[in-house]
Image 1 (cartoon, rainbow, N blue to C red):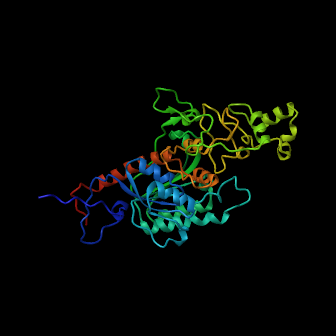
Image 2: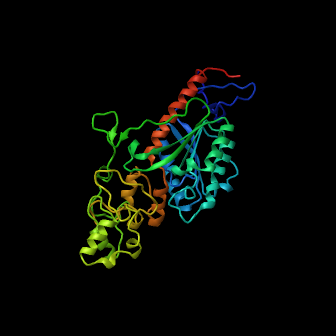
Image 3: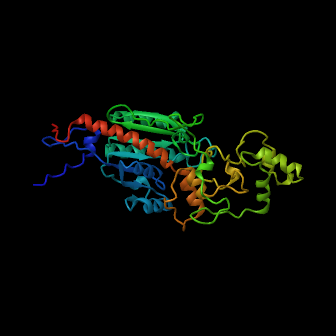
Length: 385
């Protein structure tokens, strides 16, 4: 006679909440925990958690139609394409993840664009209260941790019996070929908050427990220097004066100040924008080149514009391509980026994403903590009151 398989633990069981009176709680070994991703974007968090082989996405929310389409292509049709305020209820799940919009907290947002969206953390909290997962992960810019909004979120999450910690992690320390500092907030119902161990370091040497940071050269290995137009490795069509500016930037790390000096020497000082001449300090990375043997700098939503940061290729006279940026975010080439969408939309999705490899390291440490929680709860045949 075949034995019936043990049912997976419910969200209440994993969260440490009491089972209904008279019920049996069976605690089997769990191969994959269920996951909900809020403000999911194109799915960087989901991709990392699924790549750990320990989580299965069952529901997501994303209001941007293009990002929702990208998510759907990669993970299936379980994404609600709507403002989160319009989502009345959420399914049960073991873990909740998401990154409420960060523009309101960003130090680059001097014009307070999207400032009203700072309050969307309340929607994340609403989902947390309704779902009652065993754990949650929230991502945002580092400034979040110093905000009044985070202090309030922390207080209310603790009232829900979560142990909450927030840290600023650098994606480069976890194998992502990009220096990207982000606030990560983790909450668990039981045990210590699990943080992933760093796998890479700026000063690490081969043979040490940590590996050296992954460089731009390693990230784009195999891609042709001259973009071939395939899989978003596309060259833009800049104006001749823009190309002249690119050529004036020294290879492998130059910036706008070096560009200005070189243009002046060549008698092309009229190509230097007046606003730059009137700002002799600051914005040192604007019109800068990446270095071949260092990680990329933070990939933002307009990485295709050199005037927005250090986004020129180390040696080619062009900004980095969408494919190169995706690789610097640790998105594999197999991750579907719809060819029918505008380049600006795809760039925004990449720049707003959580690097999948960073998400995977967080997922692995979280899964180990959940496994330990289940082990402490009892054996596969244990009974609970």
